[in-house]
Image (cartoon, rainbow, N blue to C red; front, side):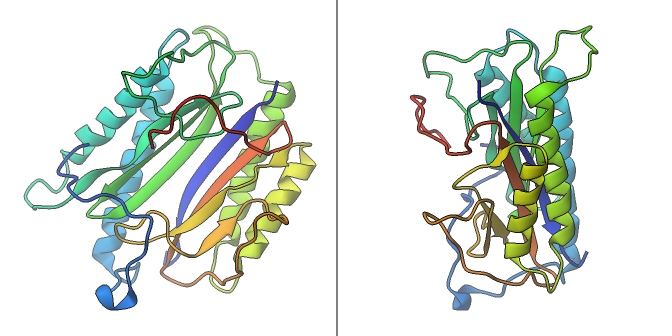
Amino acid sequence: EERSSREKRVVGRSTGGCGQARRMSDVEMDEGAGAEVDLTNQDAITKYKAAGDIVNKTLAGLMVYAKPGMKVVDCCAFGDSLITQQCAMIYKSKKMEKGIAFPTCVSVNDCVCHYSPLPSDSPTVSLKAGDVVKVDLGCHVDGFIAVAAHTFVLREENDTAPITGPKADVIKAAYLAAEAGLRLVKPGNTNAQVTEILKKAASDFGVNTVQGVLMHELKQFVIDGNNVIIEREDIEQKVDTFEFEQSKVYTVDVFMSTGEGKPILRDARTTV
């Protein structure tokens, strides 16, 4: 049985809710549309950190909340509610857009990502002990976006046995690849260097990177910027090489699979 694992980081080099009236965009505006706000702006850094704190707390909360027998749709709703509640507690005195930048997704076992069912969807997916569970979600504060993902194995309450075998290999590969990729995102390095280190990490653990995965530059209110890192370059998909720049923000979004790493469409409809 094929398993997949995911880890996601937001890297800043310079280092439904809460008034979310504007939709996160996957299209960058023309350069003349307005001045771009990056990490040279201290206020932007503060808002990125606030969004990052919220997604990290939400991920931790979901890992505690998820139990065998629970419906995935309920886990997704819980994650979204945590983001909304935390956003309501910050910048109360200012009129500011803040809230969900990417809906909570809970993808199980061989489902690669972005499974976020609606309550009306049928049949519903429920969690079971032993499932490899991937959670990904995003929050924004004034359009400054933090996205994160994490993989864990769902356990019964008193199960403390170590995870072994293919599950352990694919999760460890995704984690170490994300950490290595993160360290390469610095001025002067290129997106191609990150792609290469992800490939090496997969090889070391006997797993595969996943086809079709792109990691984007983030900008204010733009979740899918034009500069991208491709996880797996092949004949079917290539991207232009670019150098990372000071004060820009990028995602490191890593998928690993115990299978061939070639996703296929599922019956579940797309809601994200």
